[in-house]
Length: 222
Image (cartoon, rainbow, N blue to C red; front, side):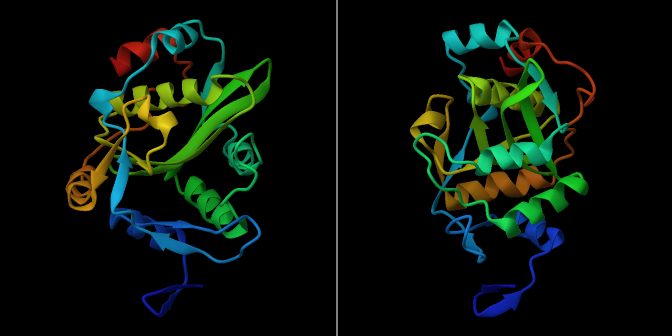
């Protein structure tokens, strides 16, 4: 149970989707803290899909197909990767409750992972929530250089091809700014969100089983 405005609410996958549609999302203080709290930033991180930027060096890596890119084949492993300590991130906000909720959303078809594999090993990726034409990026990880960046490029390519209009990143970091992320005031964000969730978009305009090359991804992004 989580307290919202002094009312105890049981968080189910359905409640979580309604929260996303209203512009709020849950976080935990740490992996060891069983509680959750709701966040609605005054300035929301958004990557404009038509303003997504791929640097020349990264574009070469994407085009070279250094990684085998897959979708939704190892969602739980991506969650584990995002929850693991990493350089500059010794703790995570992904606790047991968050993990169970997003696994449930994945089973319902509202959560997806984009995965970078190399020599049969998962080396990076990201996951997020899909609702209409909005995609809410939750977290990413890598154990090989550029793996999560390539996953982001493939995600944006898939979103643009599928007719999505909003890529929410919650907050803006220096890392995301390199891709064109901007801070959006709450009122403007809600305007974008309301239009996006009503949109008919297709995350699998490229079928899940289809291997999408780096060249195809870059063409879709540009």
